[in-house]
Image (cartoon, rainbow, N blue to C red; front, side, top):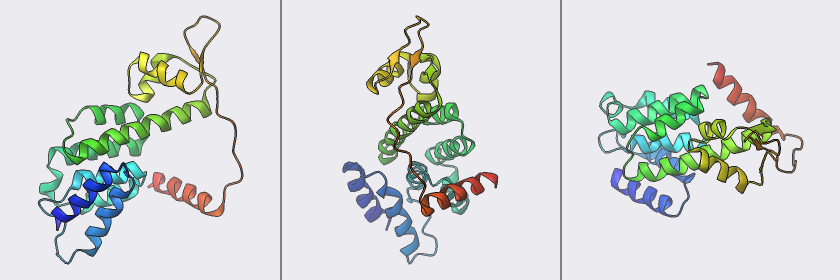
Length: 198
């Protein structure tokens, strides 16, 4: 069972369809005739990373609770659990430590790299929404990279160096496309908020 799932997941990873990974693994888990599908050979770390990639942190927590103890002891599963904890707590620096602090391997390595890019892009979007100026040091900490790379990312988004000579970056927010939330988006936001209160 696990070999067939891994093959389908590998195809999705090669195609760059990172969002599909967790759906394939969830489907395989739910449709399995085996009593203990989450056994030796199940890609538990990949499954956890898939939920984190899709932003379904509550589902990742429930998956971790279902895992047998011997799977929880695997190094990649432990690393994915640490990453999940940091993401759940909203600790961007903790997320970067968890992502860089483990030598990911196999399909988990590919998904961890994609996850790092997604986190980086999300943090840049958050900075654009919240800051008018930011230091390269702070931006580098939020984006999990060196200062030179952070400056390059900022300049690539159309931000500019502050004219006052402080070394800060002037954040140029993207054009506003903000409209009314539809009912589903509002419900999703409320659900995420309630899960944080747990």
